[in-house]
Length: 383
Image 1 (tube, rainbow, N blue to C red):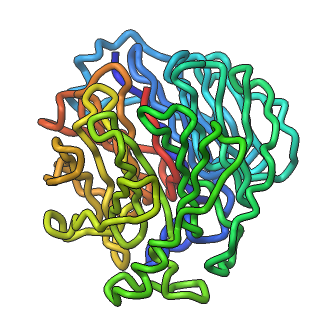
Image 2 (cartoon, rainbow, N blue to C red):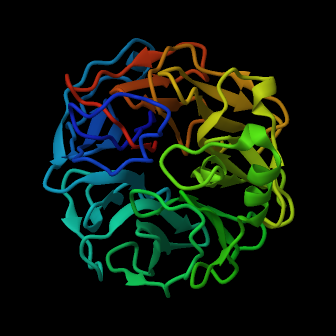
């Protein structure tokens, strides 16, 4: 089956790209979109709602050429920042919004607000438990962690992590992404925008800060200085966007931050630059994910912070070397969505309203046009 990417975006008419990432801004109104081709589904969460079209009977082979499909809103009453399809049950689709978690039990056709304890909390990330499909985490802004033990129908808030403030930003920091250790099940890492890395060893109930070495690197290496909208040159090292862990290198945690890709093999105590600049002219780390089919394969979205240039890079050796993977020209902040059942299906979404996909492992690519004027995509997921 073909996949469905999901993305998040900002409002139409928002300002253009500059050195500040799309997430490093006070979020404007947005839209979430959901699109279906043939028996497959493509969903995007943009910044002011969600959209969906009914599936047709077109053969999946038609995906070789640019497919044609219409979009319509599925969630339009609340601002959305991320969309998540449950990997164990594609009927369950979650939208992280400006007012908590919204949940669909019919593949994104209809969304309802979950039993969520707080109002006005932005949700930017989700994590499911591979050993217990009913157990989930959600990451919020201001920094907060929520858990569910009933498949996301209801949520409760974890204790406040009481994290130190290392950068004074013009917006509340956000929990952008989670990653679970491949062997120590209760050990979970999360990246914050803009506050570095936190770690839990009890399944997400309590958290500790693991950014001391990121701060050290920013202080001792001038090339890692980056101060755009805060009060510190360490801002770029603390500007966390994505995190991943692979069973092919079980003691390794990789983060994507403004200053590149960094790896820790000691549970976040120290971090090493993966030197992606040896392989790419773009170094700003926007997204990184492990292939669901091959733990040695990673995909990273890299951008040029001061321009609209971006690219998808792939690694087949857990990040030791990288090669450009896409054959398109995306513009602006880039996110990647990987299909859970088909390694050949990969999708990317760019900030300026572009969605591209391949269904043959990168040999050919097609564009999936969004409605005119739709821009500022925040996230992409694929099922």
